[in-house]
Length: 465
Image (tube, rainbow, N blue to C red; front, side):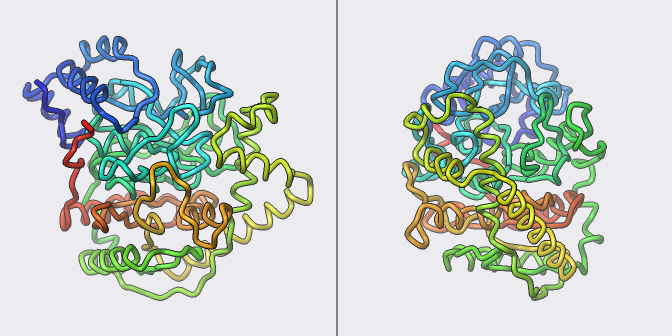
């Protein structure tokens, strides 16, 4: 069998169970496709271990036998643990994260590490360590970041599933750029241990998938409290089984369609596609479109400072001598953060900004139950960069490219990116935001979009570029 599976992961499991395909044959096709691909979606492969797992895969398990890409910012014992950074190129992980363990325990077959932006700091997957990762819809464009390799691998047909992390949009941004489903859960829904570092309390983990049911099954497998993560939430059952059962609960809810959410500058073409899709979804679900009067304060600086502390902690004594080995954007960010420092006045300002954001998001959800906006300000930009400039400066461009997504990371509410169309031959994602603990409503809304206006599960190239 040479043809790669171009359906979703749940469908592949069904094919395994029926005997139409076997996990080992699928793995061999996957490895051959990765070898032939020019997407640069993987930074590390472990084919022999994958073959051993595929040979004994239990296809009765939720993801039994499905090839899995693991974002290189996740830890897998014995695999590189570089954070996509040259100064850490020789590091090897001594443990496997709980999130990865749960997906693997559900039968998935880890193939290797997918490329990511350095320290997860930029929505562009281009690093000194790994080079440029490309969007399978157009190899001159980026798949986004930081989970860019995961998105490229899944949308490009290399693997049906890949892990991701979202600390400022790093699941939703690549999903939007590559036509995938990308759910950022309520903070704590999926645990982040072991060796959990509290940090800025912005990062959630999850997956890049081709379908809503894949994302729901991922939640079934991965959610639930873990002793290593004191912020993790109690387990909730029935995500996949519950798809389509919340439509009456959605009917009559208020929805605000906001083109310039959080002050983002969105291209007119993208805004028009998202607004049209939001209006169609409102009609499908019986939502009431409302206008809201709320100003989400700019929080890019607060988010950056809060997360840079974690970057410095990982670099340790290597900074500042390692500066020239860092990707341009991270070099700039480290120097900027080091100059500003995190003294008491800075920490006070940081918490004041976060508090203002909390109040603004609360005010928004007092006026509406759901918010529709774009996942990205525009379609995918150049794979090599630079980040698209709005006001002519790198700080402003970085800020605009995260304004749509960062508020939900700081506030902790769930948000999902759903494919709703294309512009210039590139995918456009609609982002749907809801209050804490309402992932079931987001999944049902995405489920309706998927059925009413289906999207391609992979690109026509299937990654063999």
